[in-house]
Image (tube, rainbow, N blue to C red; front, side):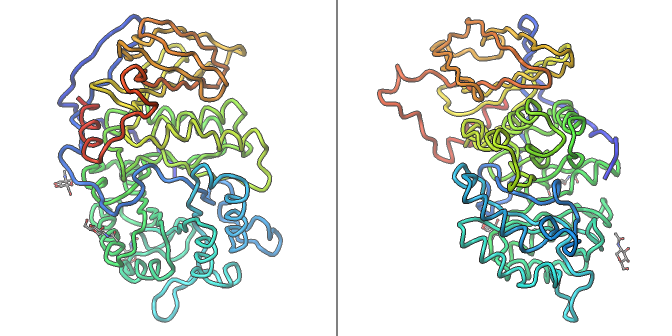
Length: 458
Ligand SMILES: *[C@@H]1O[C@H](CO)[C@@H](O)[C@H](O)[C@H]1NC(C)=O
Ligand SMILES: *[C@@H]1O[C@H](CO)[C@@H](O)[C@H](O)[C@H]1NC(C)=O
Ligand SMILES: *[C@@H]1O[C@H](CO)[C@@H](O)[C@H](O)[C@H]1NC(C)=O
C-alpha cells in the first residue's frame, strides 16, 4: 500500500481553550468527543489496547518452508513464538495475542466454500494451533481481507462473510484482522459493519481489527469514524510500517499532524492503530527503538511486536518489556496523547493518565529529538508550561532511566537531555499522598471513567 493522501481535517467546531505559555503552545482542548454522540463496539474486549505478536512486518509472505523452514509462515513459527512469549517473560508483562497475518491459506476454498489453511504449512489445521496457543494461556488471532483476495492473493471474504465468521468461531479464533486489498473502498462503510455483524452472530467474542479508514483515505474518501468506532475494536489510519526510521518518522508525523481528527476516536474498546512495533529488527537504532515504544504508549497504540523473538538482543527485549511504559500504554482511562510542542526538531508529546483528582490529570510526557546533529539536545521546561498545573505537585519519574525527580511543583523547571532520534519519557503522577492516607490512588467505576474521559476533551 502506498499513497500520500492526507486526511482532510474535519472542521473543528468546538475549538476551545488555547493558551500560549512561553514557547509552549498548549492546545489540549479539542473537538467535541465523538464518543459523546456515538456508541462504541460492545463486545467487551480490549478495554486497554491489545498486546501481542504479529507475523507480518518481520516474516511477511515467506511460504518457502522447503528452503527456509525456520522462517516460513507455518504452524511451527506460531507455536515457537507462543512458547517464547510465555517462557521469556513477554506474557508476564501483558503480551497476549499470537496473530497470524497474510499467507496462511490454500489458494482455493474447499468444495463447500470453506477457507482451508495451507495443507503443508499448517498440517494440523487451525483449531489445533488455537488449542496449543490457548494451552499456553494466550489468545489466537487470524488475518483475512474484505475483498475478493487478500493482499497476498489468497481467497478474501467477499461473498463468504457469514461462512468465514463461522469458520473462525469454530477454530476458536480470538482476534480477526480484516485487510482491504481487492475491494472497493466505497463499499467498506457497508462491508466492514456487515462482517462485524456476522462475527457478533457467532456469539464468540473476537477482537475486530479493521483496515477500513486507511483504504478510504488512500482513495480520497473521508472515513466515517462515528461508524468505525461503532463497529471495530481497532483500525489502521495510515501506511504499513516498514523496517526503517524513515517509515517510523512518517507515522509519527501523520499522527501528530492529524491528531485533531484522530485522537478523540480512541477509548476503551476502540483504538487507533499506528501498526506494529518493529523494535529489535534491522532498521532502528537503540535510541530509535526507545522512541517507538515511548510514542506508541503515548498514542494508546496496540502493542503488537513483529520481531524474531528467538534472536532478539537483550537490550531490545528490555525495551519491549519495559513495565512502566507498558503501564502508560495500558492506562485505564484510554485517552490517546497528543503532540503539544514542535519546534526546531524537538517535539513534546503528552498523554493524560490516571490517577485523576478533581479536574487534574496525571501525565506521561515524551520529549523526542528529531534532530540529526550528533549530540544530545537539552530541553528545559516547567511543568506548568506543559499544562501540568496541580498545586499539590507531581511525583515525576523517568521511565527508561532509573531517575526519580521526587515531587515537583508546577513552577519547577525540569531539564532533560534527549539523544538524536531518541526520547526521554517521564511519568508525572498527581501527588495525592497528602490527601489519601494510603498509597491507594482512586479507583474508578466504568461510569466515572467515562465522565473523566469526556472532561478531558472539554
Ligand atoms: C469481486 O469479484 C466479483 C465476481 O467476479 C466481481 O463482480 C467484483 O467486482 C469483484 N470485486 C472487486 C472489489 O474487485
Ligand atoms: C454482540 O453485540 C451485542 C450488542 O452490541 C453485545 O451485547 C454482545 O456482547 C455482542 N456479542 C459478541 C459475541 O460480540
Ligand atoms: C456515519 O455513520 C453514522 C453511524 O453509522 C451515521 O449515522 C451517519 O449518517 C454517517 N455519516 C455519514 C456522513 O455518512
